Every structure is written in structure tokens, then in C-alpha cells.
Image (cartoon, rainbow, N blue to C red; front, side):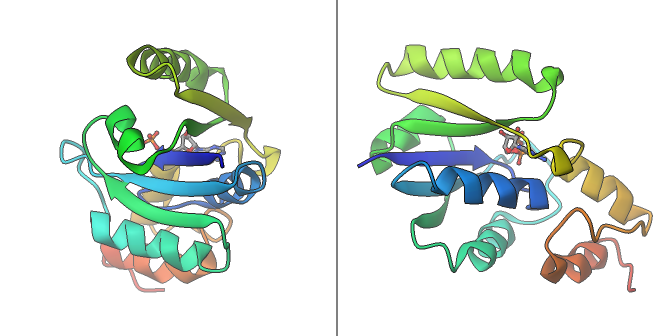
Length: 161
Ligand code: ADP
């Protein structure tokens, strides 16, 4: 039984994240999408909003659950009995940071392994930051996020379309 966690801020969930969830759910038995409660980061969506948006998008995926966590990822993984971390690599710029985090997590707990999925080419440029930047100026975000989130994202910037 291989339980994996896909951790992130998901502020908001993008089509790149959805693609990662779909693909990683196929290679592990159970996937927990772990939404980081990072009070230091000024998030656009509250933790509860982010969790419920991801639940909405993954409702039809039988081996995917959504949860929030704070503190150290390796500690949370012990709590839920997960041993695999899934992360995405978009460009070389992701690599250095991700390698350092993966190695640190492995030193903290030798049972923890990180697997990386390369980005789907369609979404290689996409990040939550780009979505927020575009949306704040009323830009078209229909290629970036699930259609059902578009209005909710604009609403955060008091934009109605
Ligand atoms: P964090 O705040 O931890 O960087 P994000 O919510 O931005 O979290 O992303 C969570 C994970 O999803 C990271 O591993 C990131 O590399 C990956 N990711 C984000 N966008 C994409 C994308 N377009 N394609 C592939 N992986 C992605």
C-alpha cells in the first residue's frame, strides 16, 4: 500500500496541478493532496477555500483525498502513514530548490522518498503566481485554471466578467 502526498500551496489550484494530481494518482495506491497552512504567506484564498476547491476537482478520483497540514511535512507524513512525496518540475529553476528540500526530507526520515513528475508541456509555464498576476489585471485565465474557478478568482480582485 503506497500512500503519497502531493504538497503545495495551491493558491489557487491550476490546470498544471490538476494534471499532476491525475498523473500521480495513477502511479500510487493513494494520493493525499496536502494543502500547506502557511501563515507567513499572504494567500489569496483561505486554507478552507483551497481545500474545498481541490475537493471539488478531485471528487471523481477514487484514490485521491485532500487535507491541510502545517508544520514539517515529514511529521505530517508520519501521522498519515505516507512515505512518498510527489513534486512537479517545470524548469531547471525548480530543480535546485526541489533537490535541496527532497534531500533534507530524506535526512529527516530515511523512509521518505520524493518522486518528481516533469510538467506537462502544455502547462510548463504555469504557476499560481502567474494566474494571480493575470487575474488581478482582468486578463484571460481560462487556459490556466478549471473553468468553475474563474469567477471566484476574479471576485477576489473585485472584477466581474
Ligand atoms: P509551493 O508553494 O510548494 O511551490 P505550489 O502550489 O506552487 O506549491 O505547487 C505545488 C507543486 O506543484 C510543486 O511541486 C510545483 O512544482 C508543482 N507545480 C506547480 N505548477 C505546475 C505545473 N504547471 N506543472 C507541473 N508541476 C507544477
